[in-house]
Image (cartoon, rainbow, N blue to C red; front, side, top):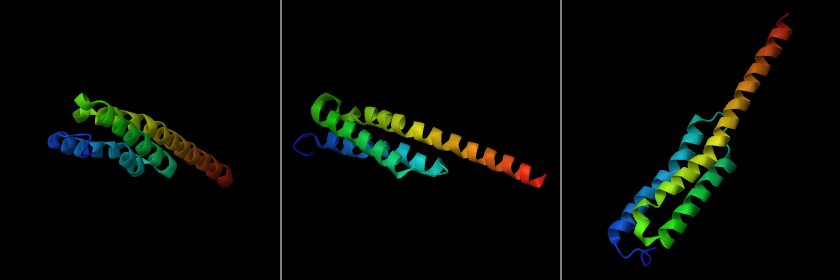
Length: 104
């Protein structure tokens, strides 16, 4: 990476801003009732792959290459988070319905 970014400031900014790609996966693990390793790995992998591709191929946009990576990571993690939340609600609704049937 050092050979690809001769400006040290751009390299440091790219390194620290790439940490923002971790945010959707961390939020997914924290806020999900059943976190999925596959969804987190997919989110991280796609986000970092896009970041590295843009960082290498677009030298003028190296400071901003993390933004599309974060967007892709969010778009990958959010559907899994919503599906887990909806399945958790459905499971709790079924358990509540079963408990009312057994109580009668």
